[in-house]
Structures are given as structure tokens and as C-alpha cells.
Length: 322
Ligand code: DGY
Image (cartoon, rainbow, N blue to C red; front, side, top):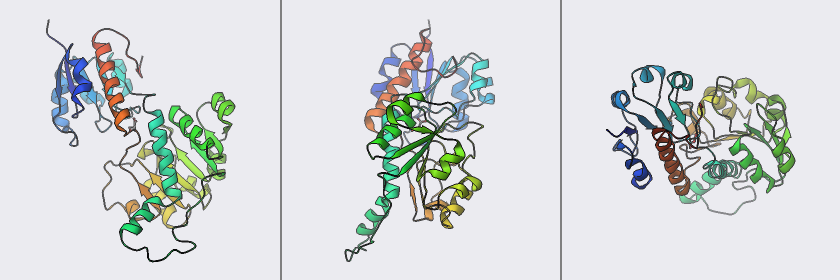
């Protein structure tokens, strides 16, 4: 019997794919950085039994309509807003992701971004490298305290809880907003549930970790920024589309809020001449929330296991549309 065919849309570490090769014919796009062109992806999807995708690939209804053999899509991410889940579900295609394994790593990055933004780490490092440091002075690169401040976490899932845990080490007051109450973070970490409006008004750090959905799209806009403290620092490590970037730019340039730390953008990669990147009070990162070697290898292994499970008729470890 012919082996099933798996197409991987980016070059991932060979060793993480080995177990798949025992049960399937695997073809990997040759570049680690350059995404597969949409027409190549479509041709591959037409005869693939499994697609192993990155969050940069759009898997929509029109592609799935032509993917007659497709049984599983394994996304190398916890988020799956790049995939039309209902279109996959109606065709009986399993959609898998990589939750849990990346929660602590993404929380580490989110908290680092908060700290870097508050304490002006990037600006200060650049200052010394540019040979601008001539004298010690009392307010040189003075930032904002983190300890004993209020953090407001929007989206209290696994990553949000891991960020809250880190915040307890800084004696922070923790507010959170989520679709449902999370009793365990209240009991174990002392977090307090707040309405979205209460959270944005009271927090010194507003941290977005909510997934991109119809409800969260553009939830940070001109109105929400205007309700925040003028000293507030906004951190986004979820998806760029939750933010109206024009409104954020206006808020940051007119001191409506103090600063922003951004790991994600509406368009990725963001253009180097994007107005947000020209602001001193913005720390910008290239969507590296889960990017540690340990975690990226772990995610890649999980994506392979998810595919192997579906192709072998077993239940995958992480499925979003069962
Ligand atoms: C995810 O897994 O959804 C992250 O955004 C990738 O780092």
C-alpha cells in the first residue's frame, strides 16, 4: 500500500521529522525563512494526506475545497487563526496545534518584553553602543518600576496563568479578564477577575494574551487606549489583529499611554518603515514568543506526533476541532 504523503511548509529540524518518515512520504519546503508560495502550497495540498503548517500560511475554504485527500493539518503554533476551522471540520479534517509545551517559554518572553519596555533596556543598550554615554546622571534612562504595580492580563489561558505566576514574584497586584472566571489563578496566585473596562483603567501594565477571534479583533482601539492610565504600558504577545495599530501609534505619540512592547503585528513581517517602529517608546520583537531551542524542537516533535497519530487512526495529543 502506498504511504500517505505529508507536506511540511517550512524547513524544520530533520530529527523532529524522522518518526513521521517511518509511516509516510515526507516532503519539506526547502527554506527555513522563505514561506512556501501560495500556488505551490495549493498544488501540494491537492494531493497531501497531511499538511504541516506555520502560522504564516493561510489555510482557507478555497484551498481545503481542492484538498481531496487531506486528513490532518498540524500547525506549528498554539494559535490557529490562520486556519478556517469550520471549513476543515465540515470536511472531516483534523486540525492540530502545539499547546502547553510553549506556555512557560512564551510567558518568559512576555514578561521579558514587559521588563524591557518598562526599564528601557533596548534604548539603554543602544545608547551605550552608540557611544552616547558620557556621564552618570540621576535620571539617565530612568524607566518605570515593575514591582508592586498592577498587571492586567487579558486572556487568562495557559500562557496568561504562567505570566501571572511570574508577576507574583514581583509582588504585583494581578487583575485578569477572560471569557470565563479562572478560580485556580484566583486561589493559587491571588489574581482578581475584572471587567475589560475595569482592567484597562486600573492596570499599570496591560498585557494581551487573548487569542484572535471575532470578539477580540481590534479590541485595543482609540477608545480603549483613551481609558488607560497615561503611565500605562501596553504589551501584546498574542496576535497583531487585536490592535488597531493606527490608534496605538496615536496613543503612543500623544502620550495617551506611556509605552508599548510588541511581539506581534497586523502584518508580519512588519515593514521597517512602519510608524510604530520609529517611536522610542516602542520595543518591537519579531514574533518570538515561543522561540527557545528547547521549545521549538518540542513543538516540532509534537506537530510530527499529531500527524502520525491521525494517519495511524489514533487520537492526536492536541486537536482543536474534535
Ligand atoms: C503561537 O504558538 O501561536 C505563537 O504565536 C507562536 O510563537
